[in-house]
Image (cartoon, rainbow over the protein chains, first blue to last red):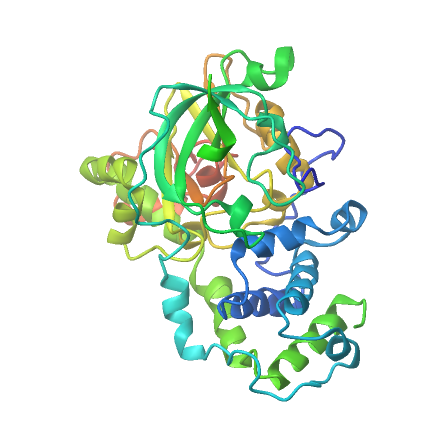
Length: 219
Length: 197
């Protein structure tokens, strides 16, 4: 979606905030929000792609106002309701209405080390013939889907070169919306800064964007 | 639910625990892992090993997952990692314009600046301006490569080994590798006695 999250190339956000001696978490609630989101995602009620999509659905004004982990809380509350694990009435009242046992059982603490070390990810060990090869010129398609996509606005319609084939991965654009995994090759595509930004870009520099086959067409 | 984040998260956690969806000890363990156990010291060990051992450096650049796993690192938010090497001619900078993707197993959780709208918006269109803000003024003949982590690939920058560290042990080298240099907003750290960029 053409949301506020797709920030690459925007102007006006000013200097980069760099607090000295920054802690990992800035408040106790951030700690809990982080741990809760991870513990919930491990239940398998939603994918990480769906989680990102939920963050992207936060209206732009709120997105910019909310601290980072508050967005996580908003997304989790959204997904809990969408998945049916928690009802609006339960969130409102703060107490369970439906009997326990109708939702998946909590992930036990003993599973945390395995969870943290998991290399499962969203790579798929399937053989799919690549549509593009390293060194090939490609154009990022001019797509504007209203749902989740990993094709940033600044790259759309731009000409690049395939630099590396990352193998076969789930397509988040469909997976986030429950429209299937669509495993396909992901490529690192090099875009010259001038191609993306015109004369504002340096003649020497480049941006590498990881894109799926569905995002690309032969140039 | 209350709008104040503290009260809101507290209420949410209580509800989820009561519903049996979450175990508080699991939340505690996840927090402890990323607050105390996984952080940029992991990445610093990877970089130091690559500086000290040319054969390891070769393996790291060819297959980062396997080479990083040799040191015992890998996992969530780093299922597939790629290491990009700085040279006198090339400087690499990592960003996630769409959210906050970052190689957790080697760097831990991202700092505020990495997640900020200012960094996410500017890193791709004005990387040299961003670098100047971090105190790095690159000559025109150095190529800047910006890596936008739009997929599940996580990037780690291998900074240049500082001069006059030939006699250093791997442990000494690891001690001077900064988080910022592994994201690419700092160049190679200066050896002890100098200023760390």
